Length: 423
Ligand SMILES: [Zn+2]
Image 1 (cartoon, rainbow, N blue to C red):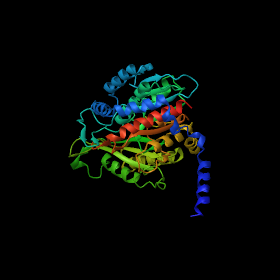
Image 2 (cartoon, rainbow, N blue to C red):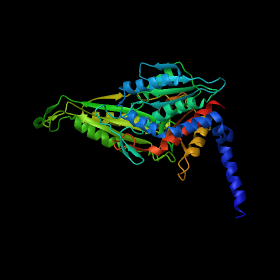
Image 3 (cartoon, rainbow, N blue to C red):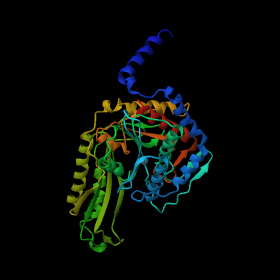
């Protein structure tokens, strides 16, 4: 037992050296300040109304590029909040500013309005005790609701911050983080920090996965089945290319980044042909390539494109590659240790752990990201992704979330917003 003390002290010293304590701007004392305490209590009082509104919001269909209804909902709520400079841009991003008193950093809280589900998807929230089930219940409607309620609570408490708080209800997140990318480039705002509210509440991400997506298309004049023997076939080229892609050697799995298995190459869609009895005139497939750093990504991207091209050459069919617009230029991105130690990240980790479900595992920051925060990371802007509720199985029809996690989640956003903007 005696021996334990010096060892514990040594551990404390090491972690203090790795993570400068002054970079965590959250202290629990901040929650006792009268205005903040009032804001927090006001959330408890509204807990069932918040869940009702969350359900309502989920049932407003909002596929990417068709976010009009949710965008209009958020615009109207921003009006009611009394935010200034409320704008809906040409990509359906909605933003508004809660002015600070001056002298503090300006912080964006971004939650996206779009979902991955087509407009035809029936969306009805099923309630079963604490579990709410519906497509989009978590990603990202829960966080959109939580962010909205965070702004309302600040108003109810009369909380004054030094820095501005910018509410961004972003569009087209699910199709390549496009809305926030457009907003950061064109809104005219130069925020000091960017927070994507787009995860489960037991996750904090401070990095950015590199993402490249391709569609490879193979073509031929086509021929009847009876004339197809030995003839060049786009279908065979697709088969050969996909086989070759999955044989590209991948580096070892990155560790400590949630459950993700990266780097990874995934074929997500395959298509082509129109009838049983002919060589297809066209066949195609898509690739989603993700890794942790630009060097690995570039190397794998070269291997992917050349494997796809070689399959066309071997088969003697036409070929072209289309790259989607999701690629982001990370040349201005900051090194990992710099990003990790930014106040926005250290404060987010401290807040997430303070509000995490009692008895649950400690939340550790992960150097990954596939949220709107990627765009900020790419610009070298201090950025983090956090979440407000315990949500599960995003992007699936069986998606579900734990209703009772919403109130502590909103409180954690209040704590984060106040800590960062009053420092
Ligand atoms: Zn999302």
